[in-house]
Image (cartoon, rainbow, N blue to C red; front, side, top):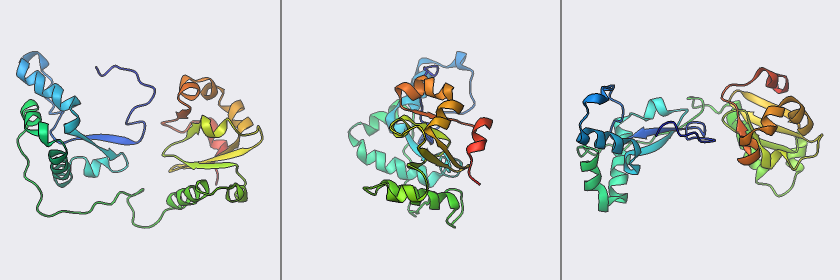
Length: 217
């Protein structure tokens, strides 16, 4: 089940899958699991009522927070009310005590209340992409500017460009600017990849050395 190869997955898209009822308890002696235990362990892994998404930038802080889990428990209990009791029985889960002290959680990147250069660039990019003309983009010297959580090449943005038109990708690790010609000459493996050709997107988990010459100071 876990060996299915997909072009992209939730983790690569910037999300962490958190669970209401624990999936991993370090007990891996599966030879001793009976049918009942195998059933509830499988259900905890794949049942839609048992998981929710947390941005990867903050998942370690919030993914296991009892208040956050209680919040999703309460929301899901209402949303899936017709099958909730059946779900609890299926995953061997006990009803959770709902939080009496609701809290507000703020996600940020990085974990700093001050506005960062990255967030300012994203705001500029969002503003430009929402305008009906190219004037704002050209004022920066680029035909296209877009933010992403890692170095990413989007075919739907790059392919319509002329060879010498430049685009800029804004990431938490810096901004990278190049022309379409530079992209084709420097990243031929990306252009030919199944991900770029079929899914129209390709991104790196680690910035490659050959991309550093395009990084803006």
